[in-house]
Length: 222
Length: 354
Image (cartoon, rainbow over the protein chains, first blue to last red):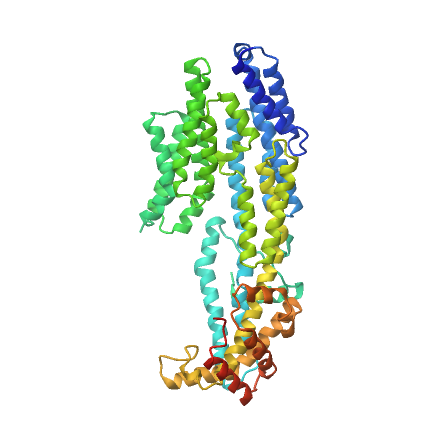
């Protein structure tokens, strides 16, 4: 056996060894093992070229196995983190992966699914408008609720009113139209704030959250 | 009016170059046509639309980047197939040279990348390995064994970079970030220890990192929210006591371009309204975090922010603000002895750390 062909065997062995005993890459390991065994069963490059069809079929299976392992892992982590919108991407890939017949078909499918999922994630994250408005909402509360002398009340309430109006203007003229570029007709779904991936990012208790939601509905009306 | 050309050039430049490269090489076929169609749609949108945000969203929602990149990948794959088919046999040396020139091109493309030095160093290692006189399969094997096979994706994990992340968090005295970054490094080391070739898998590592980031983000948000709120409380007490002083009419916090009457009005507003504003903010702080005024000074964020010099009050002035606090109540005025003290701190330039 010539050195070059032997080096190819070592290369395919290294590919296989990489995933040996891996909990994350069981399909890839099996697939790499099949390729290695095919290559190692040959005595020369010419011998391998005679098995080119078998080799090509295994390499397509190998690409599928790798994507499958990676997407299973991604899905698991996203689900563990209760990131259910992100988990939709790997779930959709896994749903379609067995239908794939070529590497290009696989690449195209994965790209399309990830592109669709990245839009879903962008839209889901639009709910972060709410928490980013906390400082402005607290200012409104301060101006509206403070115990101050009568002579300043009108002015202070005016500040609250100005803040409400500028919030409404920003929302209706800029933020909503920008959000709707991503999803036509988008409105802030306050129920999403109760979902853990969003709720855990807002460091206040449920009673305070409800108060803020009530205020936000006036501050940023649809 | 179309979007400014500078912006669309920045967004579409790379795609234009890729398409031109294919044209120059006289590539054709179904995949090439798809690439050209995606490009043409991007160019049309750039001319038709007048808002950059809407344009970016349109490109993403129509999947134009994905269409283009997928088709480009197919064009390159078809081209590769043609080369091998025409030559009939594999030429290992040629394959090695083609691979290396791909890496060399990517070195140039990274010239403007913010993480250029780290990424280029990784790729240079790959090139050096390929130019060391070894054959193609040995090159490919060593890439795996040394964990360099991810270099082209720019996803090579650098332990050094993870250590730097800990270092900056420690330098900036951001303990929650530091703890998070230490956990990330520990995960890297744990994965490296059991990886066959000592290099953690980049996909698994990036997801484990995501898991750690997700776990820490609530604490990071809470920590920062607490700092922002006590910072505002200290500021209100500081402004309120200073509004009573003889230097207030000359202080930029109250000086009005409208003249002395307006300046006096600003000072009066501060003296009379800030205690009320303070109480509402104190109440919000308590409702959010079950913390009172006294709790601020024993909270870890307080000493950290002072060590990091993001809270610039001197020790003595902090003690002074504690003295002022009980008097900062709605419809109250500051006692003369505290006003005198505030003037003294001001005159001695002892309010802020130098």
